Image (cartoon, rainbow, N blue to C red; front, top):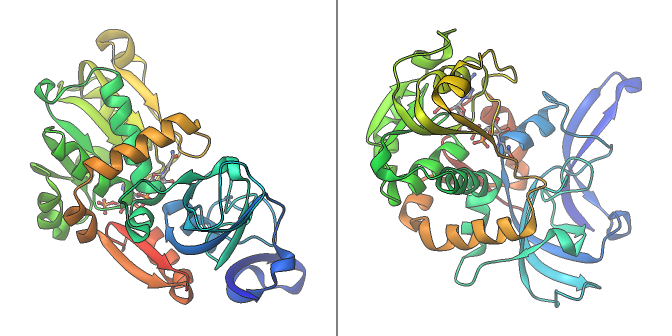
Length: 329
Ligand code: NDP
């Protein structure tokens, strides 16, 4: 038997959607060629949506949520893995269509796993999690499209959240000038300690704006979407690059084509879930060497499996700073 958070939907009983901490039997685990003893998971925005039912993340019931897994191989029929190997999993529909990491044991497809980078602590990998790995995918996309520190300011939205905090730290380390956009003025010192050079109130970007505004940003990492993303595109410099990975402010995009056809702005979509393996490996190798541990440790809060359900609600209300690691044991 092992502990897990399980989400059930039973409208018939009148209880509707509910997540609870319970015990499962190994025999109930889904199919897969690798069984992992989970050490840590984490809470991402998507886990918040899954646990609270506020977004259509869970596609099958009952479901064990948790899109991140860091642990050790317990049993394997996969040629690339041996018992005892330390592994990471992010995405691939885990916690959505396949049982995920908010449990002490997970059974998965070995092809979804990547090895824990050499020298990286398991807890640090969970602290980075999908949010941090997505932040690195955004940074890699900016660089791939030629955005250099000398080109000008990079704007990071939702800066005090998970993706935002890691993006600020990574970009600052690489020498970029980072403007951190936040709704929490109280987190200004925190964001500066991560490397932000300036703080902007999220209200400055969240109202409907003009199709084109004064050119300011050389690049962007946006987790908010909606008017915020439209306004960022409108104020991105000639040939600048905007990476869009989130919808914390809305899924709509009330924009015009003006920035794209008049300023050659690139809008680059970032997806971590189905991202090809080679790019994941590169992202994680780079995280191992480029993310300063002191900054990572400053953005992490650790909780137990039993606290994850409460914390999911707080995360969606924007009350969580940085990253949440869940010690499932
Ligand atoms: P967090 O909850 O940790 O951070 C989100 C942050 O967004 C909050 O901390 C807050 O930052 C800001 N925010 C929240 N609500 C609003 C709002 N209504 N308007 C403007 N800003 C808001 O979430 P994550 O960092 O885990 O994820 C951020 C987004 O990125 C989510 O939408 C998530 O789904 C998406 N995502 C996408 C991935 C992909 O593969 N495409 C992978 C990972 C995440 P502050 O208080 O500083 O303003």
